[in-house]
Image (cartoon, rainbow, N blue to C red; front, side, top):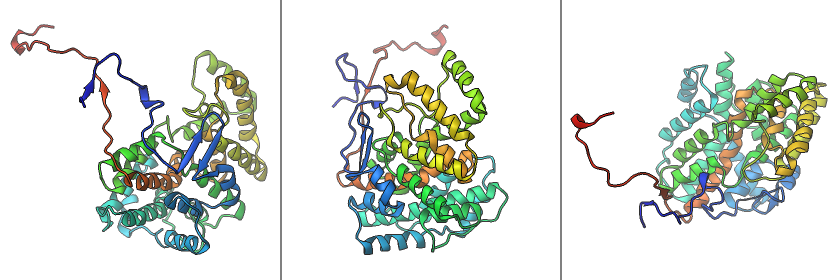
Length: 386
């Protein structure tokens, strides 16, 4: 097999669009039908009936747990939430202006250096590392937030759910049942989503037989980009820029005229309504009513209406990022933590994908399409002219 392909007949897909990179039973992203399925279960079913802990088990084991199995996993997640004291100290010495995704990457890298099983690559050890990273990533995220706020670190509790404990560590007080449930659903919705950029990046790393921590660091770094996980931050900044319901139509008119990208719309796969978006829209409405503050929701609904009228026939609809920012804001989560929240959920999917890929590993080594010259004459430097 040649290292590079130069023939005009060679297939080339920019951004690997349409290229199948792996087989998986973990999730189906049906862009035409607007469906998202985890291991056979529609996302609507899981959002209505399941928990994030149960979804983690589903992804890691490719089946629903028995009651005792879920209790065991729940216990492991709860008892692995603590992070080493030296890591807390390290986080409290990070630059306050650092992006939280950079803090997550550095902290996970540190954990990889301290875990005695880091270089042990059998399935059982990798599952234990997946559990540890999923348990600790929320603690790391909350710790960095508290540090930036000039507040003391809030240690995790073992009597709260994964969602409830995160909100507790963030705010220093136990959240109410509704906020906990809504955040739990947010984690479920973001846990897994096909061969997206960060998942693919994680698989490229794990395919080299690098350790699982390295693969997750790769995923975190890839998720940071505004074309991937960072898009939800940009949606709220857009709403802040618009400012009021009265400004929506003139702002959009100017954006259309100047070809400005409207964040939270369009998707590489979905050509209809993102099924996660409809769930988040309902929770955004409920939280808006709960807080007696409808401005963001009304602005979002009007933007959605105008965008679908203008671009719906082209397959441009709101995606998961559009309403998630409104939900997170009402849960007291600052804008630049939206993407880390994505990682707090997606670490379950990243690790599940890595575990699955290692069952039949093949090093990723794609070709490139060479389009440069060949056989140039070498000119000594003293004879070269501009």
